Image (cartoon, rainbow, N blue to C red):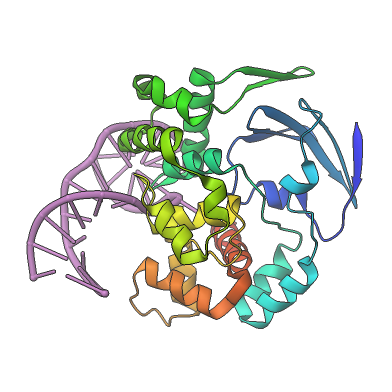
Length: 276
DNA sequence: GCCCAGGTGAAGT
DNA sequence: ACTTCACATGGG
């Protein structure tokens, strides 16, 4: 078991904040399946204890613990809005995770107009059908397949229960295995990057923002789903009517370079208020 | 059975 | 450019 000292970090909140779907908690440990790795991890105060099926897996990078300007970011977004400040206080230690772009893209194509439990089931089904078995101690899971593995046998998607999203994932997996370079997008400006992402079938404004924020380092992306729409309307828009894509523009303007963090706190805050 | 879900794309205005 | 609507299906 490896150990890593952390500060300003809450593992449980970070994992359970709707950024990643393929995880479960067994006793004290979270088992997170990401790419071709299973990460077994728990937090004990200011330490993370973990082991991973892949010895080269970079836990620190994955959990957003590198290049730490966290305290400053929290201060900055809190100053921009009362509700964000409350959310930051309520869920301090929530971090943006760094995902692999293709797996993130596939995940959020599956997410559209769905719910988190179903998304998790869909992604696990895709991994079972197309992926390789991974084991870590007594625990086993399946890797997430590369885009070309899905595109070559997209007929098998039917068994994964994606509904109408199936055709989008099939088409996007084909595009991505042919002529799509995520790394090039990483170097673009936000608008160009978003246009590129939205050229993929099943990727609209919201899913594009999720991919940009969760896997390509665009900290200003501000994904607006139904939860964000509700909380933004209630607290910032005086219940005015505004299309989701306009609320996203508003959010980026209001919260600036770290709008993505503001969004993640607001989203999590809204969901937790509703469930308690 | 009813309503909702981390929306998208196409059609109509 | 903005608004409306169909879309597949499981979870609560």
